[in-house]
Image 1 (tube, rainbow, N blue to C red):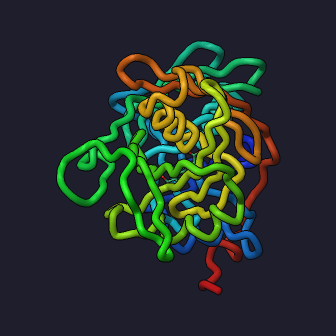
Image 2: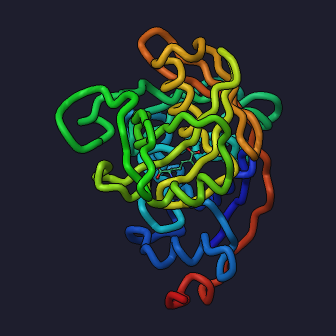
Amino acid sequence: MDFRKYHALGNVYLVVSPDEFPDEPAALIIKNICHKHYGVASDGVLIGPFSSNVADFGLRIFNPDASEAEKSGNGLRIFCRSLWDQGLVKDKPFTIETKGGVVKAQVSDNGLRVDVEMGKVSFLSQDIPVWGESREVLLENLNVMSLNHIYSAVTIGNPHCVILVESPTEIMAKEFGPLIETHPNFPNRTNVQFMQIIDRNHIVIEIWERGAGYTLASGSSSCAAAAVAYKLGLCDSSIKVMMPGGQIDVEINDDFRVSMSGGVTSICHGSISTECLSQLFH
Ligand SMILES: N[C@H](CCC[C@H](N)C(=O)O)C(=O)O
């Protein structure tokens, strides 16, 4: 199975052609591919390009636990770069259909930078989804490990739970992230961000991703956290999101359509053996 491996601020994805998956991608194959020790170590698998009736290209996004994500910001930037590397796009804008809607993208700086219009966010419980009556989920209580967290939830195609803290840490993300990811409040689980407001144009986040765990950066998390900071009046509409892996620039317009811009780095391309793909789980 041929693949291209990239990272976006340390958030790693493999890009694999649909031709490599004659049928629906088997969970075991996705898990084997992504495995840190038994595979080629990745934060997810991007399968595409598919043909699409509503966009220039179609894309499917899988987490290492084989769950399918509606959207991935870093995944989209990496997919755009892979299209550029394959000569399928140039420096003009193009569209991509994802499970979470159609996005518009543009590659620049000789493939090193990608801008994506990620779509409109929603804070409504029924859109995210979050359990309970229909409302905007802002500054609510969430009890985890007998600690009360104040959170806001938002979807940008995929669900996010954003918690304001004084000083986000990796330990915080790894300790509370998995419990919040699978909390009954979130019927489809959720991505989790611990967010510090630095000033009106800068935030810091630590991330626990649904279906992937702790990652060094996340595009949809950056958009989600920035949107919450803007919604709560804590930041202006241009926000630099700083993460352990690096920075993503986010712009939010008046009707909460969110755009992001960030780097992409090619790592390698190669071929995964059938032996690796067919391992029965460890
Ligand atoms: N784990 C996420 C998808 C990948 C998000 C992240 N890698 C990004 O860059 O947006 C989910 O299940 O919604």
